[in-house]
Image (cartoon, rainbow, N blue to C red; front, side, top):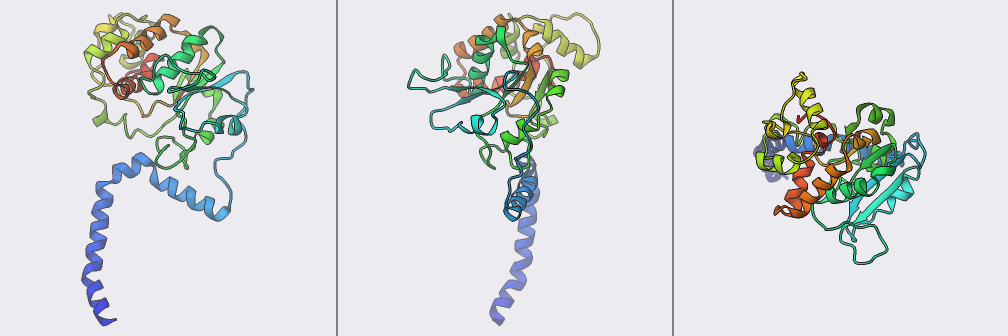
Length: 289
């Protein structure tokens, strides 16, 4: 017993100091995962015996809002119909091996291929609100980028303020700036001048001009495709909601151009998807940062 005490006396402070430095070093990681809120919500669920992600159903009818997502055959997306019964849903199986499910022209660009395919196929019959999300329902590691205490997409959509989506046009479902929107993230290797021109060079310039005006605060006419922003930043990770009117602010041909870029680029599935992740807000009329 005495030997144990003597051993613990000098080792204890070392362990405390080590833990402190690990905490400081990983502070950005804790922030990114919103770990504190997740831990607290999990403890509440454990002791209360109820789920925190069960607020009342969102206001609206099944006719005027839709959930769009990409999934693989190994991912279970049945939770959408069960937990979001007042939402239409368009679930694309990107690696489908049968013909009895929605699928995409190619399994490339991560979720972007499904998002764009839905817009193109339903351009003339869009619901009022469109929510683009991932296939995971919740989970600390799978859905860490979902901005709710338990990283729950169910809670995110049940508490989504639909009037704000209509007012703003585009809403990122992640409010946390880390990663993607912090100063050090805004100059990234994904959105180069070449990529910008490939994607927007032949597209209509209306919403890009709007985005430039929002950013610069002036109405000076500019040749947008040559005016590549020095910084592009947005909260990760390609989960957002848009209004029908904001989608229709671009012609259908623009979305076809964006999808063709994914199909034709030499960039990989992951890299082409990452490019689109940094550009959804620009596509829908927001400023580059």
